[in-house]
Image (cartoon, rainbow, N blue to C red; front, side):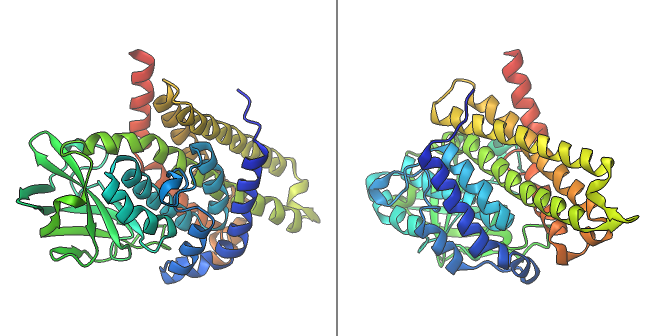
Length: 375
């Protein structure tokens, strides 16, 4: 399949690369060390349309496709994997509200999400349910014109930082619904910040709901439709996180090429040794293969290909495994210096590792692929 990009897509990619080089890369190490995220930088990204990439234009969305999103997230991740991944999560929230919310809800929230005046977090995972999304315990009980929510969400990016939380909760034994809970709502609180291996440039904590009362108008779509919404978002999320792996791996590969060309051992650059050349060749080849799979997956969503879920699972599994391996190989090529924070490679290794777990573990990706083969 031909994935030659249109002139517009090349412009989108280059714009994202320029933003990444200027606004993300110079500060990524500082954000990682200080465990901080810049609201100002996120708003600048929103100014380029990166907060509502595949949201309709009516309320400020960019109305681009999933392949376009992959191009953007790859380039943003070259500068800061953690920030790019958080933007992917925010885009999920914006898209879900715009796609499934009623006109009133969309008018209230989508314009501010698109500008990132309002920052959104997505709350599906719970302490006892990860890839098994249907087993969640959080409940929402109707009480007149309100719902009362009780439960705990785990591993929530932006917890305590974001302005709004898209929460999946049970509204019956086999019924899951989607709600928007605004920060400051009585009964909404947050756990302690998690101490993590990577993704330090975004806060992660539990979101705790204790008799949290929200208006019925904050429900997204019909009662009981939440699980369908969550499943509809998975394919795109997998492409996005795979694209973030491409960007981190690409930056690590470029750093390895530069370093091995400058570092001398036994009187010549490390890049002059065939072992190094073979390693770089394999890294570049694997990165290109992963990129093609991500492009196909994004294109499959845009075209509503009947095999899109399988394509997305394959791409996510391959790109996240491959990206993590390439970053680790880049660290090895740096020798001892790769282990030091000054060179930036160890941060990429740490940030990419979680991508093999997010958006469905890579073991679950294999289950999806196998089922598509055997059905």
